[in-house]
Length: 374
Length: 120
Image 1 (tube, rainbow over the protein chains, first blue to last red):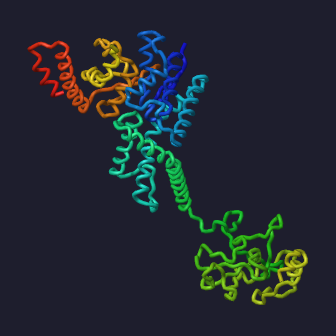
Image 2 (image 1 turned 45 degrees about the horizontal axis):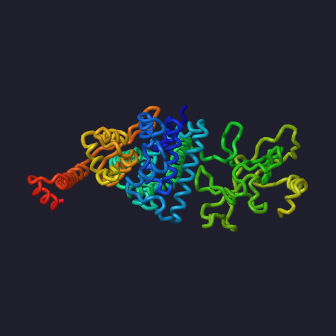
Image 3 (image 1 turned 90 degrees about the vertical axis):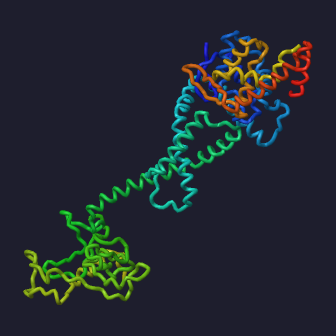
């Protein structure tokens, strides 16, 4: 009967329970040591114990506490009792406790050991990732905040790629437990690892946002190839941009001011939506303004819309109140009257600028909001 | 006499000697030492010694995974280890000769004992 056990590389290995429990007891007896020190000491322990059991039977293992003391003494580490207890030590013990408990829990729930195995299979991914993160942290530290526009997750030019490749080799070798001849190096590597873990979300976030903005910029580029200056402007049913409306009454005479609403009673705004002006995208110089016969900038549905000269634009994005308005010229002085319309026999003349009183009167009567407009 | 006490002083030397020709993992080294007649040697003492020699920079180390079983940590000697082995071998030779001379005094070796004893 066997139980899955975490050996020191956190791999799942199949070890008989008596060996697993003996190894766990040894680890517990060494839990006052720093994690790296302890892991270093018991790395490969299960394999040694397995051989011992294979040679001499399970009874040969003896007392795990004595075994741990012997291991500790031979490794030149002070005995457990003389170990100085510090706050750092208690934190270390807490970490060790959690690790031990986790290990024991996995022993009781072999099914979850599969998850651990899955995660440890991903360790090489982390080794590569942390090399990239280390590279980016280095770039950040060397170049300061002003990384500028050309941020890339991976470098493009050969020299930088070489640096990254070197970092990757170091990271992977460290991950494989190589290149760590001095104990203090483990401390340094541990601290560096902590920094990299903290930095990783930022690098990933940066990478994601860079990819997104590049993607977005590409989309924007594609869009600009068919750039439409009338985006946001009204259109006819055929799609022709509309930014002004000229109304003629039944007799074919121009209506100087007409207020339009859509089927829902909303102002029929073709150009603006409350702005104080909109620059005509076609000429780039004409500044279209809403009617000044309404309060604020609500006059966008009063047609035809007038415009002002570009000089009327003020620094803060407004239109000078006294700016002279360029009244729109009607496209036709008059159009043929509608069939059956009452004509008084006079020839319609746009220059007279006659506005039927009725229409203005009706506007005031029907729309209570218009009362306040005056 | 407790031979484990004797072994303690020469454990480094014994372990270095056991892997000077061939890399080995912990239990490998234990087997080699036992095979050489050092029966009293404790497994954990050997492992601890290997770790300490590694920490001191006298050994290299690498992990060899095994399918379905726990991985083995192999140790190999490096130049620093060989230098350590050489100097300790010399020290041991002097010490053993001195003790030998003490235990088996003969006219022929008496002089050597004095000479070697000084050196040690």
